[in-house]
Length: 112
Length: 115
Image 1: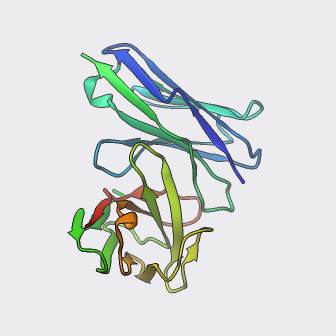
Image 2 (image 1 turned 90 degrees about the horizontal axis):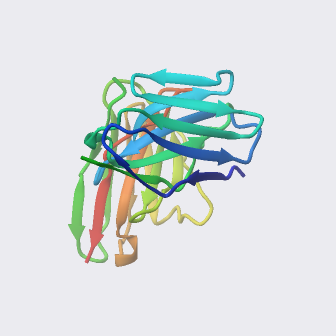
């Protein structure tokens, strides 16, 4: 099955700096890669996703890049704010498979 | 849009009690709903997948008689933890998607504590 690895497990950044989280996947058939943000005591919230026919996608301060050849994708958060502090999960799935394979998560702390 | 509501948010009950958790898609019809379990500081573990009107598909190692799932309509799925014991204490989260190729949207989870 699909194996998704996520790094780093924790990330502390100064407010205003950028944060980058990286994930790798094992199954070359995976073609959908969402990112979720989970705040304490809440469910994951979809923040951005990318499909394999696109190399990069951006939504305001958040961007995701995908390298299909290397089988890795990354989340970039620019101009970080304290409210960006949360646990972030990457995931991967295939078009004909409903299951999401999640990374282990990254705890991001933005220092004011 | 794409709001998923989960109820209750927290349950504390005695060992041996059965607990029902509801998951509703509020502004879309969910052809498929998913149930996850999450342990502290860990990732989400898929327990089962349910499609409206059909039996749920359980992941390996998940007891179907222990975790009963019903998906009676396109907007509601329920998870019943039968005869719950302290080891069933966990954070249970549901998600729903409108169709194949659509993203999964998650509820806010249910914190289950069995005394």
